[in-house]
Length: 144
Length: 144
DNA sequence: CCTAATCCCTATTGACTAGATAGAGATTTA
DNA sequence: TAAATCTCTATCTAGTCAATAGGGATTAGG
Image (cartoon, rainbow over all chains, first blue to last red; front, side, top):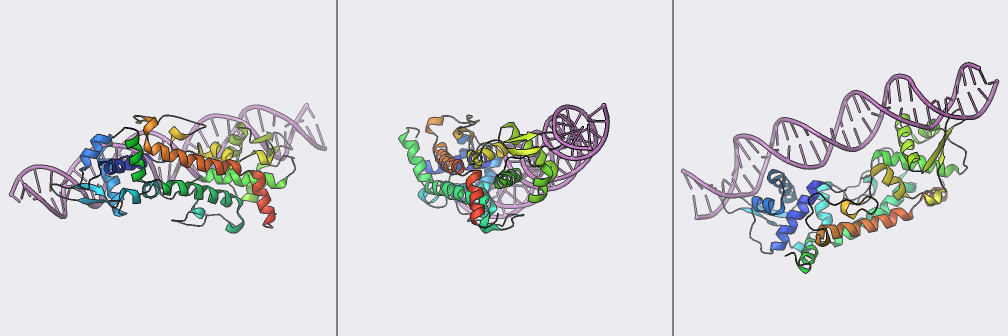
């Protein structure tokens, strides 16, 4: 399961993507519209900023905007920031590989083979879905 | 990421599958062979038993055996017992559906659409991999 | 029958994380 | 310079994960 943090992050980003323009939006506006605890959202946006998914302006007319075009921000990008690797085991993670603690021989591990296939399938989906396609779906549904 | 419990469960079941015969195997034998904390393994096997994945005999020559043919025990079956639903959100779980706490309209939720596709992809893989295919891979690798 | 070997069950512990909140500090613009 | 904003650090509570402890129930074999 994804974390609550991931849900909030996706909703906030989708809000920015749906707005379309690149003028900064204040945290409080996003928090109210999307019903996200304001201070929690602050922390989330700060993390997203560190990886370039959003950028911010401080001061009076400050706020947040997407850090790059919506079509270049995938669900996978977001989940990796909020929840860590997509993989079901460190030994099959592409972005954050690590040997399993008590693995005796990775190359013949039958568990690994299954988890690797699962990771590839998940990653293919989550890397192909991005904020632009998601916002488009909302428009088609009449939600925007 | 899967839990340590899931790893132990898969290793223990693979041990039983690799043995092939249906005579019961003691917890302590599995624990020693697979380097799994004995008491922890007890708890895990008990849970697996409740869902029929293994069956047990008590008393003097007791122990555990697979509850059905190895080819009918998928990785998905095991992970659902140890780690809960495969889905990344309750609202896309097939075996344990639940509405998201703060979902306003599930039918148009763009996040849900992506997570649903991810679940389907993962489930297809993990339901197709079973203990028999995994044990076969080990044999081919010369590990058995 | 009775004892030893086994599984079965409940409770508990320690470390860690998730989710949320508080309060001040730094920056920018009007 | 003041008001509005983001930035940072610290903290709290509840819950989960991994593991351990200590018996109770059951069965095979002598």
